[in-house]
Image (cartoon, rainbow, N blue to C red; front, side):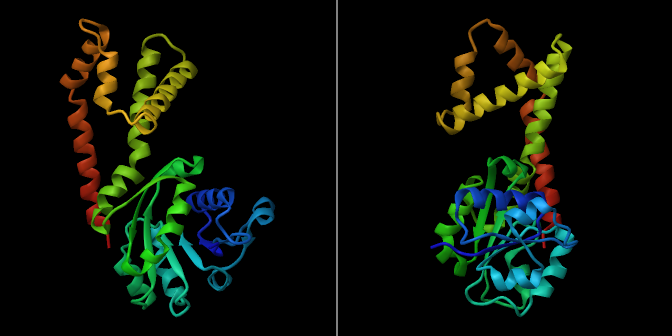
Length: 264
């Protein structure tokens, strides 16, 4: 069953979600979007209903919170008393727990889903982690349809959201750090910047398809490329000597520790 959808916070993530939902034809009618500045371009007004928060609450069955973390307490306090039994709240705000959302709304019965997408959502390729409170589970199929339109998703316990924040939310930065280093290696070895970046990007696309579509374990693909006495094994051994894997593990652990300290 189609639902009316309001997105509170039409920034980069909010608009990417709106675009994915529109293309998947999930919403009933046009999507309503809000901005704190209420500064909407003519292009946005042609596609969406550009409204204020009060109008968005009256309009939407599904309310997607996509504001910045520093804005969420003010927004939820403003929404207090306006959340009805039919509303489903989906929050993509980092660091704000379901318990905290219910406290700020003064509503213990509100249906809440937490989502941790990443910036690849703008290309319909987000890796999103989802957590539901018990009352929101009745809307699981609809929520899955929404996030299927935006990439891939997994459902987990909310207690794992600090880890999800780094592995999913920060993940593009970590992957792009590798891509940038690979591009630099190309330049070091005589390729121009454009060609070196193309090589890095296409390699990442190719191996991601092997994992997601071919369902191949990375070690299996590595073994296919690594011939005895060849150049690949020497390159891999050098990466191991330099501590590539352990550096990545330490980086993720450091990020998770920071996320845990920030979570409310």
